[in-house]
Length: 92
Image 1: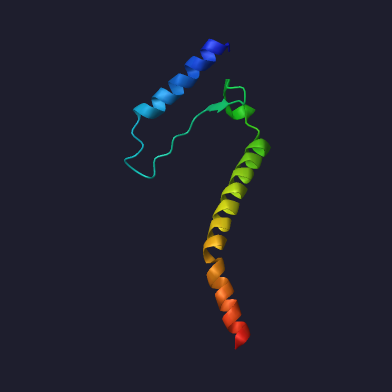
Image 2: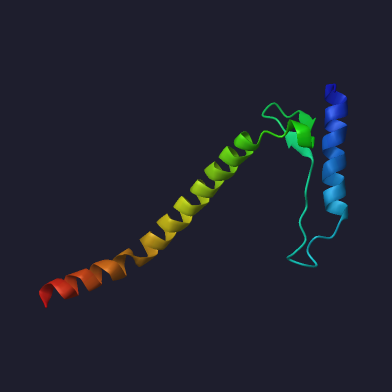
């Protein structure tokens, strides 16, 4: 696939996603069969070419980042209360 075809494919995928109204229901899921490489090229993903280990690693990395961020936000928000309770219990 040359660069022009790759750009055209990318724009087609974006156009299709924008044309469909996915905001009507929270249950709607957009599934794409294309993978965007770091250099911007697009590969069509076929079931026989899926590397489940690679996909699982990507999902694990993304989940770890999200969980860590949410935990840090929660901890920063709750830290003063936790310290206050600890100090009060320590004095009793």
